Amino acid sequence: MKADLAAALLLAALPAAARTRAPKNIPTADEALARITSFPSEPCLAHGRIQFFRDGQKPKGIGTRVYTRPDGFLRREILEKGPHKPAAMIITDDGKTQDVYIPKLPREWSGEVARESGADSLARLKSIYDISISTGGHVAKKTTWRIDFRAPGGPLRRSFWVDRATGLLLKTEEYRYDGSLARRERILKLEMPVGSDSLGKERDGHPPRSLIPSDPPVPGTSTRFPRWMPLGFLPLEARAESGGARITYGDGAAQYTVLEAPAGTNSGLDEKTGREIHLKDGSAARLLPAGDGAGLVLRTSTQTLVIAGDLADEELVRVAESVEAER
Image: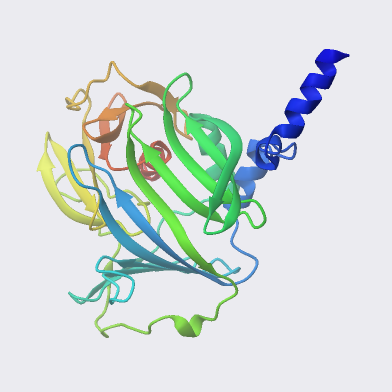
């Protein structure tokens, strides 16, 4: 009786926030993930910031402005010089065609990229990560759930903060294999609903270049450009290497490379580290550290595929699958 009374008095003395810190209605991983792959129920405009954390360097930050509609239309502006300056890069995606426009050049790229269903995206996440859900505090004045993605038996690789009410993705963090923070993207202010009249109407009138150039990247080889790349990335350079081709991609702040070469080519990475995963077609690949970022190595009887740089594990896998799907 005395023990029960002491416990009751102790509980009553705790702040209300402490007593309610672990609500009983935490969603399952499937419920939380299903919501973040859908678009908002009404048009919204999100003002945010991206930070990159390099070892021994001061974090680099850039501003973002993202407009989305229920029909799947998305427009993303990169604001390198501050929230009141013209956009340095503008990306639009209507669900069929993706466009990248750089006003100061001025130059535009346009084309179709490989698409997949929300169910396929979720299946990939669940196949390469251990996923857990917890309370996430407040982001942009919204109460969130936090979704953590870990390499099975290994380190935390990604975290998402999702609005409990709408399912909007409000914050993401990407971590290196040593556990250090590599990238953070956070929404600072959310306007919902909002009209499209707040968006700029810019184009220079010149015909756009192809977002995915014609194959092969290097004449005389059987290599191809991947049919998918993360939003805002462009192919910057393609050169011959190791009997194949190496393509460099960038978005102004981050980079990654894709090397397609004959079987047995040295990947330049320590393939004894990391872990084995499987692509959609059943091919076994390896996810592993690659310098300050991450890498994927796929070896077959005829080919070596190496993707490495500033990408998350699921992005590495999706790039690899967009190469393999066309063979």
